[in-house]
Length: 265
Image 1 (cartoon, helix red, strand yellow):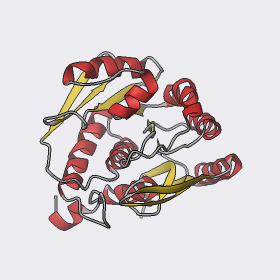
Image 2 (cartoon, one colour):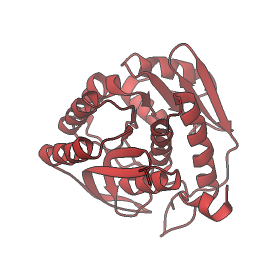
Image 3 (spheres, one colour):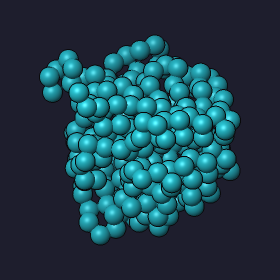
């Protein structure tokens, strides 16, 4: 039996299992690819927030990456929490030397409002990480953090996309989930546009949506889908996961990465 497509996530660990490395690997399993991981940071995290975070040394991150890529190989890479400028620069260098599409989720702030990226690392994200991205997937807070553009309506999404594209990613997906009304995202490479809409579901248990979406896109790219195809399929998967999100602990619970196993969807 031949191996499934291989996807590597480079991200932080979420001890509560809803986001980060844990969400990435669950998503990859659900979508039929082989998930592998480079852990960049360890967090003490639950449904209430992030109680602590410890980044790994650069040499540990580099060794994990080389170990996987040089032996097993990858068809796509996805990045999440990178914590510091030094880690951002190291991961950008590694991705730049890997012949595989890269999905960059420029994680800056957790669902609970906790900072997951040092302010000193923003410049490295702009100048080194975004230029090696096949697709960048910022939410609206991350757009503001990176570009200064504030998105207050759908009309602002094009301006936000242009600002992020100016840093060099091939495509950008501006996630408009924080806007009122339907969940509207804009995918563009600066010439073609794809507007993705989904009904907004009344479920507060949405921890891990960003990690899950980026991992789903990477999984689609690893299977040979085009960027628009991978993003559309990922949007459908994440919407179902949000609908099935469940309470866990006393705060915001996770999306349900295994919803298709239970519904046959």
